[in-house]
Image (cartoon, rainbow, N blue to C red; front, side, top):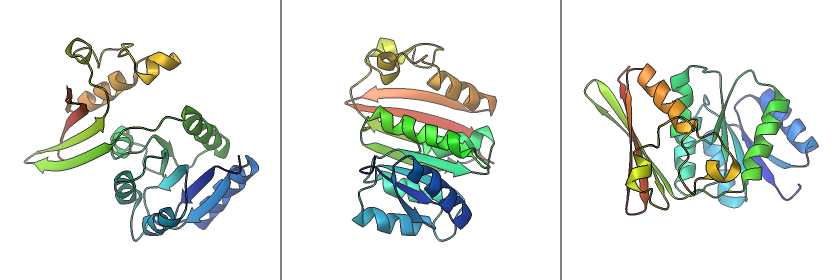
Length: 211
């Protein structure tokens, strides 16, 4: 696995070193950065296959770094955060992360999640994220370029256990619960979610009450 490089971004040296030890023992090459700005500089000169990215950092936090990274890079990103609320997880995932772990975490579980992300070997399409505030609510839009979803399937996309034909969950035997869970969490917090598919662009619009 020495040809696989992992970038660990965290302002706490102890956490960077801990993850580095476990990842090195798994055979990965490890690069470390103390904040988002340093991570962006490293990505300009290094080929990185996966990021472990803390959210709360000085200079440039993980959310800002993730948005900038997603403008040009599509490697898996696993976010780390001490924030454990459902909305914090949704926000991190909506900003472009592929997975989200709460601190303190089990290093062995993190290694398992790293392997899972790398095993997928799927390069996602071009992703766009927009966030705007309208009066007493926030609108979050996430778009992904790919094959259009037929209207009859799009109408059922938030149903429990429903899997769109040709989706990754269908190919891998997944349960088709991901979007149903997101919808339930959004509605639990007084929000709404809608999906669109048009001219090769799939969009998810999420509206939430403004904090």
